[in-house]
Image (cartoon, rainbow, N blue to C red; front, side):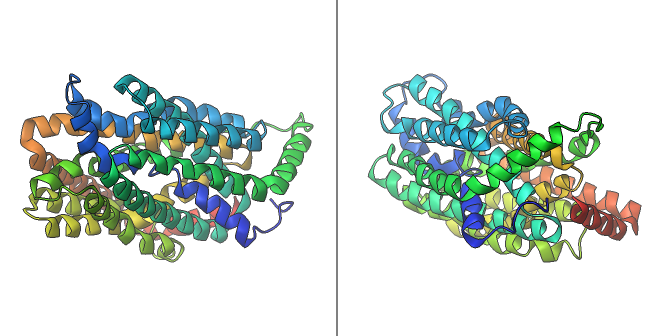
Length: 411
């Protein structure tokens, strides 16, 4: 996209802030779960519903992210971003005043509609504004921004939850100034992209560019499993921490934030890591480290080993998150980036939504600790399987790295 100027610092910060408010949106209220569960103790099935309150926004995202992505390739992204931020703020802060669990659940669905917009649009803007090696570097920064945002919201949510279990819901109001800043910074670029899109539509004889469904069929299941495993932490970890004597909501938030803190260096170094490892090798290493970390959490008899397990899992998470977007976008034509962003967002949040549904039968069968062990062993097997597949292909791994890098440069 030669007609779009190189993004400046303020524009870069605005897109990074959008990313920081998206992927951890569901987990913001994790420190409030014990208090929320006690408040609604008379509600049948509250054990399962407490986990679903964290991940229910993912259902709305699953249903709408693909549509939002398709629309972002055709309609005014600024209007879509403003509406998404409004839904995010209203739905997210519903917990401050909701009297019934039904009202709270409705608010969580509205939050999901907002997150579908902010994350999909942010991802599409990132793919449009940064190209080649600059995109890989930016995606690393974006992964670090997501981790940094996770640290802030978990610590802030935990601190507010110590005042009252409803307090963590106030964090969602931060999206309003962030979205306002992004709207101002993106405005001139939105006009240029709209003009380019209008000009392209006048070329009637140009063949439609095919969507890379084969690449999506490989990457989407991995993104699903990544998020399903990751969200075991905010939905189940507060209860395991309570078993080992950690009951303060602020401390719970800090413990969970340790995982995202450790993930930041790996995300920042993603551009350099890709020079030496193929995308699939990065995925394999990520699952092995996450699996080892989750097993250690399951075996922990005190908070120390829990933190160690979370930090090891965070090492695996760091370069993995930008790897999904960068690798997938290397296959996607420019005219399909919004659609691709929406579908990848769908895969991520489908994993979030399914996480408590997957972990619930594991916990029922093996207990809370056994559930962590089972999930961790599954991740280790998956990581070993990917490494085994790479070993069978032998020297093709280095070739894949070079081809993917060259393709990403062309996109």
